[in-house]
Figure 1 (cartoon, rainbow, N blue to C red):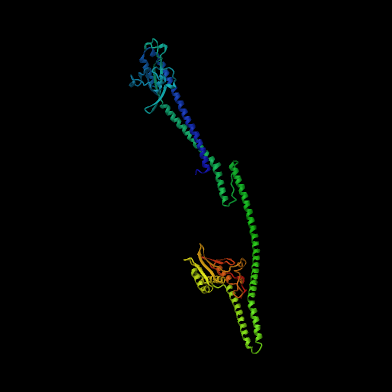
Figure 2 (cartoon, rainbow, N blue to C red; figure 1 turned 180 degrees about the horizontal axis):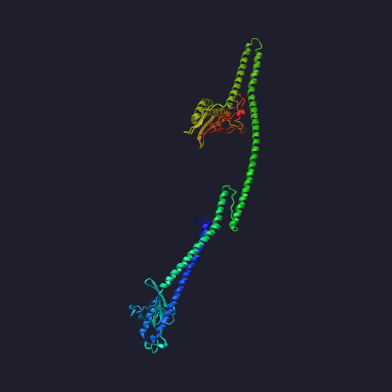
Length: 539
């Protein structure tokens, strides 16, 4: 709560006001008390002088009874606690309190010291204030005033005492006045004054609170509410503060900022709508262009595939046609000559070989384009790899190839079609064997990362050039002779790995060998391999 600006401002104003009024009240009470005490002292002085003058004649004529009667009558007045006379040595000669007669006053008291001034001889150099003392007697404050009785010239030869010329003071008149009435008056007046002060403080606090509420709290709260509305996106909110102060100027600036923000938002909305329309128009144009481009790519792919198929099949068919014509010429006679029979058998073997080659091309092409159903199940890649290595075991022995295995144990199972993965691994292993016609080494490694399992097949064969590596996954591209391959093996491998959401990478250098790295995700969502670009090309 104290974090509020209005609360802090109100607390500051109220604190200053209370401090000023409190200080003023304290000063006034103290000043009034001192003034009343001064009046009491002057009254006591007048009373003491009156008693001294009234008893002067009786003292000079040594009429002690008259002196005592005068003092007794005066002491009977309200507010007078006690009157006593004592000699300069401190011996009490008379007092309204009969229990004190004959006792000695302690001259070490503050009021006595003002006359004695640290000596046993009284001094006449003293003021009225110095001869007073205030003490408490029976829970009542009492004002005591000492008035010295001086040794005047008229005292010489008087009958009251022997002539004494060396002492300036003959005795002391001590008057005690009760301050009860003054204290009661002070208490009543101070209570009234404090009540008025408290009323002023309350009124001032109310005025301060009203001022802070009207001119600080409400405008600041309105500004806070306005900024909160702006932060929520309500740009139509305005602050209604009619004031020429700094807060009013701030409210005007806020409203101006809100107007500009609302205008900018409207412009942005209009631009967004315009941009959406333009984007929609351009999107439709791009979709049409993409549709045409896809169609053109399909036609281009179909043309490329058709040309490749025609080229691959045309060669064996040309051989079949040639040897068929030769056989026809040999069979034009009724009975072929016996010596020509070996040639005819040779021609038929060539025809059979070329026809088989055409069948192999068509079969591989069908395997490449066919989207056969996948049998998805959890599989251990180490076991799949063991089966593929078992199938090529005899080839490794025949070509004197050393196999090195580094299979990571306890590989997690992956969801895949184990037969297709085995087919892809077998194709890669056969390629590695064909790259080592004179023997060499093949290393097979399995390893695991956070998201997938990797199979690495490395051979020390002839390797490939960068230009060859750029086309190895394209259909009908091969680095082998026409009689040993049609260039669909790696394309099929790529399709199988792609359907399993995996990746295949290759690194190779001529004369240094080749490395294929397959990455298969541990939790894969298998989809069919898209061969739509080849639709109608091989059917």
